[in-house]
Image 1 (spheres, rainbow, N blue to C red):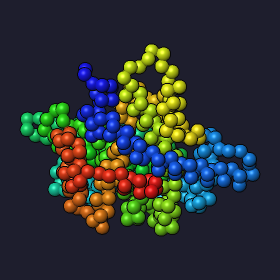
Image 2 (cartoon, helix red, strand yellow; image 1 turned 135 degrees about the vertical axis):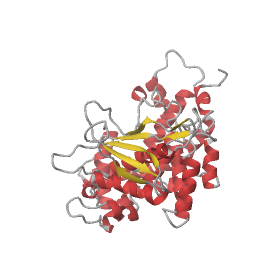
Image 3 (spheres, rainbow, N blue to C red; image 1 turned 180 degrees about the vertical axis):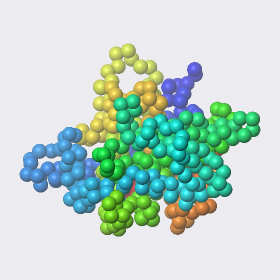
Image 4 (cartoon, one colour; image 1 turned 120 degrees about the vertical axis):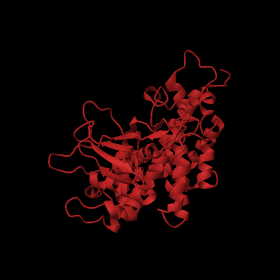
Amino acid sequence: MGYEDYASFVLEDRMAKNSANVYNLLDELWTPALAKAKEELADINAEIKKDGKNFTAEGWDWRYYFEKAKVAKFNLDENEVRPYLKLENVFEGAFYVATKLYGVTFTPIRNIPLPHPEAYAFECKDRDGSHLGVLYMDFFPRASKRGGAWCGSYRPQIYENGKRVAPVVTIVCNFTQPSPGQPALLSADEATTLFHEFGHALHGLFRDVHYYGIGGVPRDFVELPSQIMEHWVFEPEVLKVYAKHYETGEVIPAGLIEKLDKSSKYGQGFATTEYLAASYLDMDYHVLKNVPSNLKVMDFEAQTLGKRGLIKQIPARYRSTYFNHTMGGGYTAGYYSYIWSEVLDSDAYEAFEETGDIFNQEMAAKFRTYVLTPGGIDDAMDMYVNFRGKEPGTGPLLKNRGLK
């Protein structure tokens, strides 16, 4: 079709525009991420010695000894946090953030068909009381559900005969089912997942697009609305509203919040490096001009990651033989999109912080107007610049991940 390679074909319609821009971003993050990963490896090897062992860590040792290193550094057992993260409180916390930012409300709906008896349904109303849409939330695993977490819709927002047809949005997760009579208590990661998918839900509920074909946004922009919501999860002001002990009602102690904050950046060397390795692998496959019929994928993988200095203890997040994202999972030449969007969400959240108020109404109104409402009616970078007043930089992301 006249394109140099497959990556050129798909990237033209995304924010990145071309593979050079993708590689520039990955390269900019790779060096500090790999350096941080090597620092973490040194901590792990130190823990092995403290354990009375005399060997150098391999990949299979990482998580066990990393957790030991994390406890030693921050004295935080993540199970300390769970009693304060009761499922219902966490999604009420997400509702609180949306109300503070945008003035919307979520009211339980009774006597409505549910995808499962354990699911929840809410009506979302705008600041003026008008109907915006319906939100379903379905949290627990069962035989008929695939794994993971996602946000979808039973009916997207459209216009018919000049009138807005409200969306019906669903959040689906696979949190651990509680024992009978006990509440579901989330981990810190699961609370973050809930806020993330809720960000996608707000994007769907706020959308106000008149024409078919422009409702969606580019793959490397679509995670901005979800990932920015993650920034509010553990803000002290927000935790004080929803993070209450399921038995006593006690608000999560300030000391525990501080430990959670300090420990949250630890491990980002590993997390960023394994993610970037998979992103490089995805791109390297799809910039191939002529794929030989005898291509040996494991040799190709070893070469593409080896030349960048990936340490042996960290494999790519997905190996070639099970990398579904790039082999038909919708992220072909697009796995970089998560970190591209994180550049956007980190920069966007900094816009709120710069005002001195993480719930700044003027900033929230601009974010809704230019990011959450218009679908793909404009070029994605133009939409972002309309909100922020400038193109994003990687500085806020590096700071948030503790890589600088």
